[in-house]
Length: 374
Image (cartoon, rainbow, N blue to C red; front, side, top):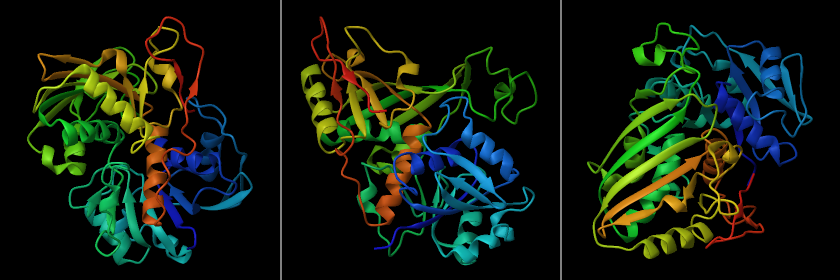
């Protein structure tokens, strides 16, 4: 089976993150990303790839020659598009010549009509969107529902969202073995690029407030995103988000009423079993370091969808669960996008490969301190 030929539209944080993840460990890339497009000039794309304020320099070389980016020696065609035209208006017709298997829309602005146009105009055989779009054929959370992919009927898919990928595996484990009657989900999410550095206009007024000056409440789709992967939880989840003045790594705090009585020991055993086996590389049970808790920046660059803070796992009165988790909302998500590409290519990753945690020297702990996979 030949490697997937992939194109990406949108080279913001996620689009560039997918490129970095694709080329980080594989000579020439894990998948054949042969063309990318954005509204920026190519020199600025190369500049932003080579110099990242959050993650530093990539592990591969970055350059450009005429209309090609050169990533670790591999040439990737760059097409600059008109921001005033949408895919449904043939903005991406230049991509037809590349015989794409998958078109990744990472623009954050696409509609279902835009994505359908990519298929109808034969830009690519399948579309994978990095935001949940109403009307898509399947929203995939790798490790939870990727087995549902059917190439005969799924052509427009999403890789869900960063918070959906973090929440859904936890909800999957709990609902499968214990049951969830209701859960309140609170996300503490780093500031995003649509926010304002200084007070200014925004379609959501509170997001127009200076992002470094306040904790800003806003809505989040994490409950809906989880339900898209786990429809049995419809009507059982609600959520709110607070944008916080940090750069990366998001926190999710969950308070749930379970369907039957359980114990702390049962829940710990469940999560540890899944972290070792079915969801290895997807969830990670973190017990801190040398008896101390880590802070969010310690999880920068981690590839796990969910890092469960086991010290904060509680069970009250048998059915009231409290749990906090963290995740790198860019790196982890971008690696899941690549994992979904593997599913589309008929190759599901062996989730334990490359995700073995190294045991560190630990003192005065019930559990050994674990080094996170970076």
